[in-house]
Image (cartoon, rainbow, N blue to C red):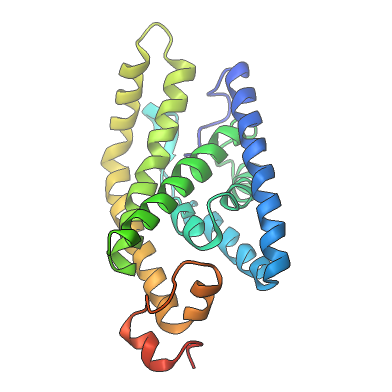
Length: 235
């Protein structure tokens, strides 16, 4: 999702930046509201922001697409912290990556924030909730959310690039070509991110189910056996 500096024409990166600014503003408002209700939310947001920063720093260059493949981390972040709060978390991670690691760019910061937070975070969150309602286990719901959320990030990047740089070629043709360029590296990474997301949720549920309850991730007896045995606070 790290579109390189200079890849987007001015009108496109300005438009993406404006849309990302609205999403980030909404995320900051929700962050403040949640922090007032539960002070520990601030610390968890900081930890998850660092997690997104680290997880998305394992790039495999895809020169044909002008970007790179790597895990996103935002499907898990959105499940835990909420899909809107994932936006300010994403922009912080991407800004530091652009400034200090030449990973992505400043003019493409808005576009990259949208793909990481809106496509990856929102899709991952919605898939997780729908999977829960369908009766899937916490692990399977998380795994499916991580897998599809990861792929959604690169679908979003492909859409952005196709709209902005299709030239005389058809938008759909450029979109398909860009998306297919990502798949040899991204599909295996999406499988790994799915497994990681599911295992992370299962681990927290087993050791600190109170955190998941406070965040609204689980309710009632939606817990693995180990968590029920050790008690609500993992003692």
